Image (cartoon, rainbow, N blue to C red; front, side, top):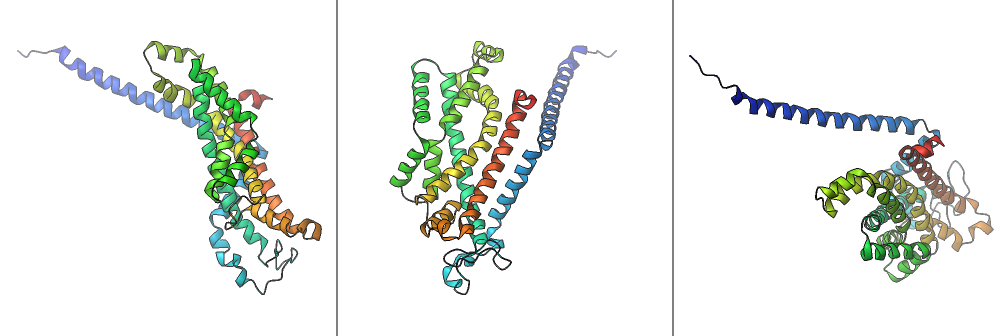
Length: 318
């Protein structure tokens, strides 16, 4: 007569059921995120302005990446352009005209895109990181520490960012890294205010209170709850800030505070100003880099507005 022990199979069965529930929960979360991505992409694709902006951005990013293949660096060497006429207007032989040294402007635009877009993106990333950290700290912590952080944010908001960037660029060594640091350190305050507002809103939710009751510390609340809640807003604000950073880089280069050894759209404008191209009739020298800056900034703005509308349903309905 065999002895059976039904309870012996219970733990393994319970473990299998628990594993199955975990797998089902993971699959459910993955499917939900995938559906959200598809829904957001559908909303983004339905926005004609956002799609046009995305196409323009992809175009400029591609020409910036493949600039050495499209136009070798030798085409920027003045000693190899002795036979090219100076101040040649746009034509079939010279699509965007030439500058005062006989260099093709379309070649300078291609190489300038590498620096302008790189500085814009790098400075924006630096600004977003500082602004997110400061905004989370100002919204989450109370008392003296939170008040001090808020006063620092207020100080940088009141302080003219371009003026501070000019001062930093004048004091520090000339270079692309200096421009990135100057822009990044002076343009984070607005992001901090936005993140602080979102943090205060998230702080009032029930699951944050439940996490505190269960003994969660500041690190757990900030990185597990607060940061994921504010990241969509930060990413949407990033695309809007890149355009401002590109304009700031062009302005600093135009004022002669950039790296003169690197091509950028601001440097081209600075060169055109040095020879008085606008008053001398060389309109293409000024118009070409100006249109490039306007197109890229406008494209980032249109993409950023679309992402902001996707994240905020109130804006989308409006």
